[in-house]
Amino acid sequence: MKKKILIIEDDNEIYESLKLTCLRLSDDCEIVRAKNGKEGLKTLEKERSDIHFIMLDYQMPVMNGLDTLKEIRKKDRAIKIFMMSGTGDIEEQAKEYGADRFISKPFPNDFYEILKKTLNEK
Image 1 (tube, helix red, strand yellow):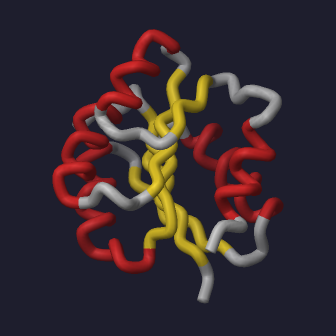
Image 2 (spheres, rainbow, N blue to C red; image 1 turned 30 degrees about the horizontal axis):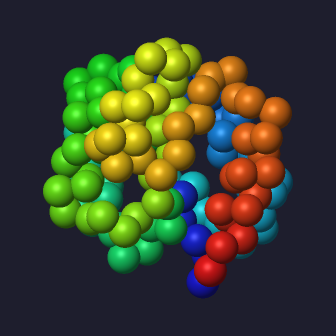
């Protein structure tokens, strides 16, 4: 059974880059996209049992990443979540709200190793 990764990202270029990277790092994954936090919560509600982990952008229209993270954590403390942002000043808040990792944009050198390890976890 393929692992589903939910990417909540409004920027098409970043989404495509993340999608291609995930597919290159693991042939055992399927990508699901949401373009904002509200859409991400709906997707998660429908497909939660199948979602392996979430990559969540901070700055999005409709509902930002921190608000989305708070809502997810109210219902699910176990799912792994990577918060991504070009704004480093939200790292502490992201961790406080329950992000497992904070990934800065542009992506750091060790991002691909972190992602590969996460994709290959059981």
